[in-house]
Image (tube, one colour):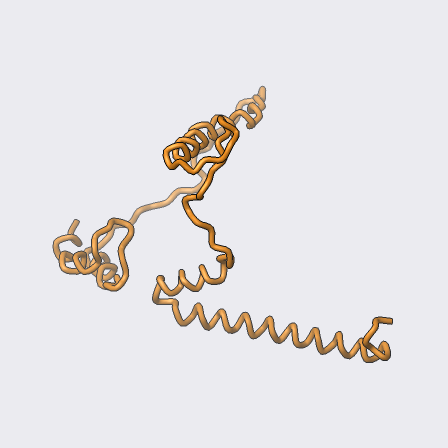
Length: 164
């Protein structure tokens, strides 16, 4: 028998209520986050802040790193130029290293029949009204990182841009 409980009956009651409380906490947590996502469904900035708050760890790491191990000299360095070269050498060579680990393809003696693409897609025509609607729905208070053109400039020029 577990210590702290006078009988098996008391322990069974404890487990029953513990499970109920855990279940209720899970339901309430799910409902809370659903309402949070619902409240920021039209604001992508708030949505990403919520997502980052849920996924980010408490420990923040500094970037770039203060020190980096130099495999050539077998020591740590804090020299930015040496650190840049270490990163460059790593990314230049990683493709060849990974490719060398891929086994060669097995050649079959029978011919492989190719029927063409299994999936395809069609790009439909875009209309001026559709482009204007998208530009009108852009939030002026948010930055446009895709092309670095301020949103208020896009809105001012929409009549010139939408025919193209």
